[in-house]
Structure formats: C-alpha cells, structure tokens
Length: 198
Image 1: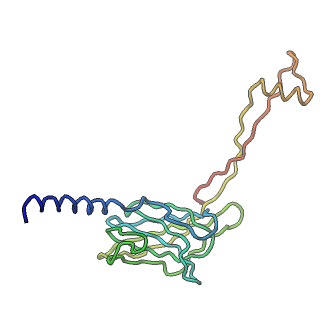
Image 2 (image 1 turned 135 degrees about the vertical axis):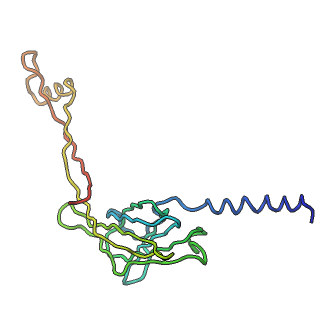
Image 3 (image 1 turned 45 degrees about the horizontal axis):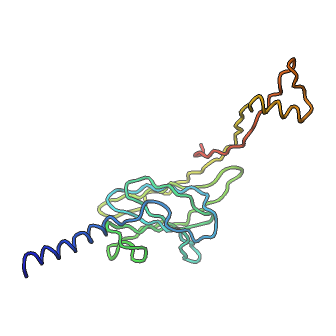
C-alpha cells in the first residue's frame, strides 16, 4: 500500500472520529413526554469528567417521562412536571446517541426513593437539589435535598404620561382645566418573581 493511499485513508477516518466526539447534545431538556407543563425546579450537581443523561421515571409503571442532558461539572437546572419520579442517571465519557447513550461504557446511578414535585400551600412549589459525587471511580448519589421555590407577587407601578392622564380625565369627566392639574394615573402590572424559599 502506498504512502499516499494510507494518508488519504487517514484523512477520511480522522475527521469522522473527531466530529463524533464533538457531537454531544447541548445541556438541557432532551424531551418531555409527560403531557404536563414543566413548572417545578430540579437542580443537579455532577462531578466533572463525564456527561450525564437524567431520566424522570414514573415508579409505578417504570415509564420514562422526561430526559435532560448534563455536561459534567456544571450546575444543571431544569423544570419538571408535577408528580412522583425516580431519577435515573446514565453517564459516560463518549456520547453515541439517544438509543445507546454512552455505548457499552454506559453506567447507571439512581435515587433510592421517588421525589415528589407538587404545590405546597399558596405560591410554594416543591423542588430538589440532587448531588452526585464520584469516589473510587464510581458515581454515587450524595443527597437529594428539598429545595422549594416561592412565588411572590408584586405590583410594578409607573405613572402614565400627563397627556394620557389628561385624556383619561376628560373621558371620566374629571377636571383638566389649567387651574386643576390633570389626574395622575398609576398603571399597575402584576409581576411574579420566584426565589428559593427560606
């Protein structure tokens, strides 16, 4: 075999292998088949050195309802649908595809009991902070700690332009003569803010 032919074969093979290593999915939601809106917070900490796919699994039916892709070492945040779910983590170093995940090297870690995502009282949504650690080459679940999120309603008020306030005053039959300043009208918008509960 000539050197040119060998060089040509290497040029064709090497870019394909380099491309497959960079084809891992972006971090975030892969799919949601629950049929429900995803509104409850789930935060996941993972050790660096490998990537992870988290599956939300209905414990009674052993059915996967949602999946997210995690780049190892980054704090992963996702909203999940209401319900009780086991979390199963597939992890590895070389992503293949959604069917075979990380290939023959795929390893698994899961929660020991279901996590419940639900409304607690008024304006409080139950969520979790899940931490995975790696010891002696094995990825383990360190903790699944409740981390509820509170919603706070606030009014954002702004004063309308004086011309607009005068127009509204005229429509309402109010005074808008020079000796009576135009009515000032506060525009109020309801704004919902979410934060981790104390």
